[in-house]
Length: 124
Image 1 (tube, rainbow, N blue to C red):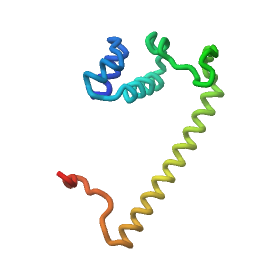
Image 2: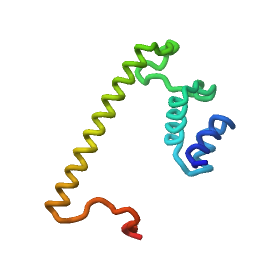
Image 3: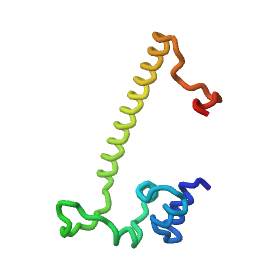
Image 4: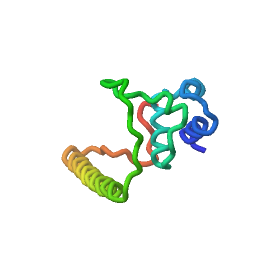
């Protein structure tokens, strides 16, 4: 099991706190918190009781009560899919542009910019 998954499972299944996990693995609480939130979002998991009790409210309105989240409708999900598809297309174009810039730079400067697989890391 990957370390990241192990840490997430310890938090969700065993109830270990972020501080305890930070001390055990030497990874910042913020990073662990983000990993857990992403994992919960991907798998559609609810916040744990510990997360709900420690959830920070908006800084500008600390006493403002939050409305419960409504379940997303099919239309909401379709809009999100469309937005994500657009973002993915944009990132593909960005990647192609970066590859083209590297190709041109390698050709013009006559140097290898891309790391070849299997080559040793510099500085070691």
